[in-house]
Length: 152
Image 1 (spheres, helix red, strand yellow):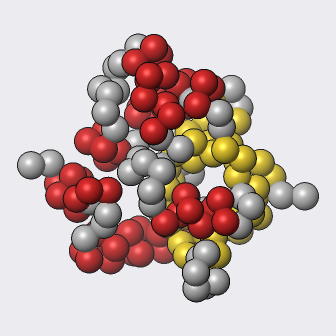
Image 2: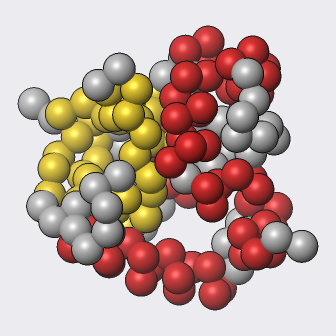
Image 3: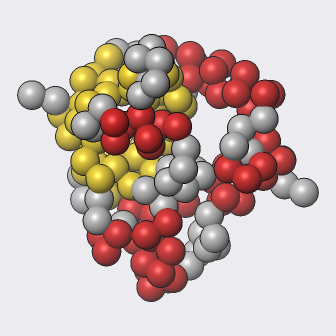
């Protein structure tokens, strides 16, 4: 069994995955990693406390995007939607942003770039990294993608 799939059975993180994600988010947020690796901070929809999640930025045609490798039923996606897209990206500095959900018909090029940039996500997505755009478009409605828009 693939380690990534073991860490996130059924799309939910095991305790060890939550601990690793917390540590990774702290590193990404400090800017220690390459700039495609960021920390997303968003208020929790239930607690109101800031939740920090390590993510991989995808860049297509000069626009930045965030992809949910575990699908639509993950906390950060629910929290972003509940917050009206308001969030903060961190990579050495804090950047207030608005995350705008991308329509499924426009997600395929972003998913292709994401698969190239985030090899750890490949076990969670139902297509191989070299899949044609048509195959990516066929599964795009199951994989949330958000465009990063500067706040203000």
